[in-house]
Length: 454
Image (cartoon, helix red, strand yellow):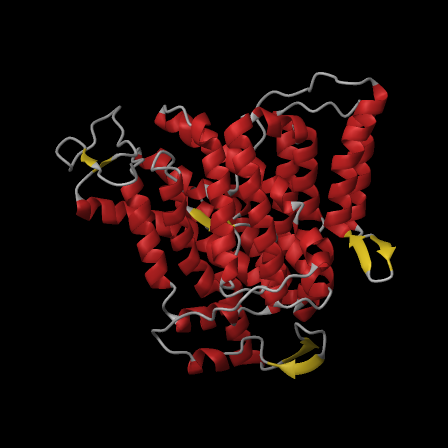
């Protein structure tokens, strides 16, 4: 059952060695406090990633609450988890934007990816998670994660950094310090702290040094203030975020589909982590969890929201508090929905200068890419084997380029999409041609933690 939590002990204290199980709770005032912690843990990444993708941060926060409730219902309360904004689509969205795609095209493409993820979840439910390991072994999964991150280098170089290269450099340095020097919670929100620092610094320079002459987000060189508060002044305190419907374009859909591989790995890894902490057998619910994330992405993007994924940040909160109650997640979801009803907050987020995003994304994209290497290391992938080295190296270079391969007069594969096809297709083809089926060099399950990238 998803509801009906039993009171753990006296509801006030948690003795050493005990945990609050998913179907238990402490007193409701305490559960509200734990729910608020989960909101804080997911908040930074859940609004930073929509901002980078050019989507409505208010709507992303609101739909993360809706997505979390939907997820908990679909897994029947067995897997406590929060669904925040996914970073896996950032590269694909950048490519769509570079091709003059609008937000409707972006969310339409991601909606289709969500449907694919939901279908994968159904397959896992009936065939078992082992089928995913065979199709996406660690060498492939790590490569896709890496090219998703490194394939974004051109966005930093061509779009964000030129808008204010000094602010970008200073923000990058400050963010690095926040991530490395600060420990615990402050370290986990280092990206958010870097963004706030860069935002405030830009505003101070506007007040002291005046306007800057540099490219805008559209590439036009003008004299302008770094921070534009005009939309903030017009926004109301209470209201609905800006909903919009999806639009479907095949070229955009193909670009985003590689992110599904990363989401599969991410969800499988996170669900297993929750299972290890709670001591429960979560394998029977693995397919439900993956399908629920896919359906949540469909629901969110159908109204213009951001893609969703399970969040390692919130798993970390559970590990620290030993409170695994799904009641805390329902409370966090409700708080997030209420937060999304403040348009003025959304306008403030949208005013973030491009130079600040340049400093943030150069670290963010690099960290996402290196998570791919983390998968290789943890699974002891053997790169002395040319079956591993050749297609992986080729695919990553195609993505980083980004290289465009024209298929027909009006259809092309480029960057991350082209690189993923070469990685996945090339690996399985060369593996079949070389020696037939061979034992995978793997030291564990596929999966990676997001907290380093959020």
